Structures are given as C-alpha cells and as structure tokens.
Length: 65
Length: 262
Length: 221
Image 1: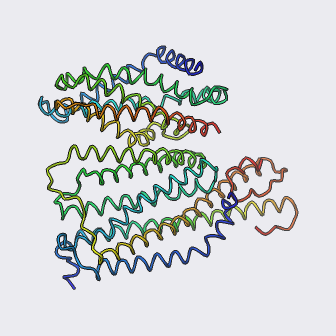
Image 2 (image 1 turned 45 degrees about the horizontal axis):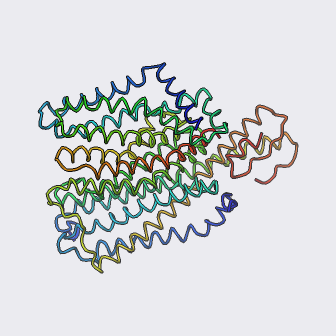
C-alpha cells in the first residue's frame, strides 16, 4: 500500500498534481453553484418585491410569475 | 436561432441534459482515475510520473478547446448578434483559464522530476503561458465595464482578434525556440503513447469535456440570472421614480429591455 | 482619402500643440532602458548581449504607454461619436489616427533607439538592422495596439487593462524584431526576419483597421 502511495519515489509530484487538479475543478464547481444559488435567491426576491408593488398599485390579483 | 437565447428555452433544452452530463462526468473521471492510477503500467523510461500525463494532456486539450469555443462564440456574436453567444464565451473563459493554469502546473510538476527543472522555455510551454495571458486579458476586459453586455461584446471582439493571433504567436514562438534551443538536456517529446495508456487518457479527456459542458450550462444560467437581476433593478428604479406609470415586467432576456421598459 | 488626411493632420496638430506626448514617450523609453544596466550590472559583454532585447522590450512598453490616448480623449469629448456618424468610412479614419500615433511615438523611438544601442555597447553591425526592424515593427505595434485602445473605451482602469490585452499580441513583433538584430550581430543575414516582420505589418495593416473600427462602433452603441 505504501508502495502505491510513494509511486516509485515520485509520490509528492504525482499526488500533488492530482490534488491541485481536483481542488481547482471542485472549487470552480462549488463557486459556480454558490453564486448560482445566490443569484437565484436575489432574482426571486426582486421579482416578488416588484410583483407585490405592482399589484398593490393596480388593485389587481397578483399574476403568477 | 434567436429564440434559443431565451432563458426559458435554454432551461428547457438543458434541464434534461444536465443530470446526464453530470453523471457522465462523474463516471468518466472515476473510471479514468481508476485506470490512470491503478490499472495502467508506468512508463519504462519515466516510471510512475507518466501518470501526471493523464491530467496534463486533458487539461491542455481543454485549454485549447475552450479558447476555440470562445472564438467561435465571438464569431457567432459578430455575425448573428446572438446574445447567447456572448454569454457562452463569457461563461467559458474562467473554465478555460483554470484548465490552462492546471496544464502549466501539472506540466511543471512533471518536469521537475523528469528534466530536473520546474520550467523550461520550451515552445509548447511558452505558448500555453501566452494562452493563459490571453484568457486573463479577456476576463479582465469583460469585467471592466459597468454594463455587462458591453463587456461581453468587447470580449467577443477580443476573443476573435486573439484567435487570429494565436497561430502567428505559435509560429513565432516555435521559431524563437528552435533558434534558442539550449543543449538538449531536455527531451521534450513525451512518452510514446502505449495502448494501455490510451484508455485512461481518452477517458480523462472525455470526462474533462463533459465537466466543461456541465460548467458551461451552470455558468450560462448564472449569467442569465444576473442579467435578469440587473433588468429588475433598473425597472424597479423606474417604478419608484414614476409611481403612476405602469411598467410591464421586463421580459427574461433583458439587457435590451432595460431601455425598452421605459 | 481626404478624411484620412484630415484626421491625420488634426491629430498631428493636436500632438504638436501639446508637444509633451512624444517627448514623454521617448523619455520613458530612455529611462526604462537605463534601468537595465542597474539590474544586470555594467559589464559591457552582458549589456551588448542583451541590448537588442532590452531596446525592443522598452520600445514595446513605451509604445503601449501612449495607446490609451489614441481614442480616449476623443471618446470623452464626443469627437469619436461624430467620426462614427460621418459618411467617410470609419476604417479609414481609424487608420489616420493610428498613423498619427505612429508618427508621434514610433518614429521618435526609432530615432532614439541607436542612442540607447550605443549606450548599451551594442556592436555597430546591428544598428542598420535595428532601425530597419523598428521601422517595420513599430507601425505594427501601433496598429495592433489600436484594437486594444478601442476595446477599453468606457472601461474602468483602462490604462492597465490595455497593457494586459495588448502585450501578449505584441510577442511576435518582439521575437522577430530582436531576432533580426541578433542575426545581424552574428553576421548572418537578417532578411528572413525582416521579411516576416514586413508580412506581420502588412497583415496588421489589412486586418486591424476593421477590428478597431468594429470596436469603436461597439463603444458608441
């Protein structure tokens, strides 16, 4: 097992490059998902605010968004 | 064509695609990792370090693939003025920049044990470095405008100019490199690709490509949301300024509609 | 053609009236070049070895420094908007502005370059080639740089941005420009490099006005 991890003495380089690649790809994914969620929440809030403001003014039943 | 730019259409098209693509990414990369790390032999010359190739080559491929993608988007935006083309190019840039940087980092981690140096001014390495600079320039340009749409358009033009320039840069760097080739301590041609290495390599390339498309879909959605938010904020300001005026909710593919909702 | 000449004349007259622009570019070039001996040491051999590269890199930076002004002032005072509306083709007008930029920055650099070459102890064999290469290279720098200058119109932090955009695109000119001088210093004919530089210049002359004009129109939308 330790032989597998040492990779013929080059373990640091090999595992290092796999780790960096994994970290970068996962970080990009997580950052994108997080800002996607935040943007979705902000968009829905804004839509709700505008919708209620408009329906109050028009004295009409709020339309479905 | 232009109806694809509507987020509802984009969502309808990509929603069923997304789980399949995500699944394919996970399976392909998992299988690729298994073959790359366990079920493939080391190179007879380079030993186990050849396993870095299974990351390095796909990352290099993705770096180039993303740039070509951006240039194609730039051309589409120029010819058909398709709003989604700008958004796609903009969404691709960070992914491409990440892969190009990964290619350089893994290449350097491969070079240190094999050639005894972290960096050589080899033609291929230098070209990848310049590609990274082009990505960074694009990202900086696109984000430098208050109006994101203007930024995306300028970015598309830059991507096209860059794409025309890439072959010239590549040629000149090759020429420069052959002229300045240091005494050949460094054998630059990588290992000849053995059939047992082709499988993990192909799996990783496919996996990375699928990962790109998953990220593209997610990032395009993010861009669409942000445009929508911007349009809503603008129309909200109009509402407050003139309460008597009734404005329709601006349609989804906003930007243009920021003015249209006046 | 009249439009081209008119804009060229106007830009030259503006540059001459302000005067400082060309002087600043040349001063920047000389100061940058002077920094290198402090960095690498005053040994004549080393300086002679790196002279062509140093001169080219400094010229690149100096030419880039003045790029932002090509369109920025006209953009701010609305002249550029009038130019896009004029019946004369915008490509031609853009070419006129680039031409003026080259005459006010590229040309002084070519004249200042041999001076710095002497100070860096460059062999005299390289002088003619250096000036020829700069004569072919600096117009290409102005042409390519104008695209960057047009793209950043209306952007925040335009000055830094333009260098990030334009410098990677300058690499071919740098490689062949320095290569030509190096070949001449080694006693080999530099014709090949100069021909490639001429080709780059012709391609830039044919293609970049369209890209620049496109970018200017975009900025005006």
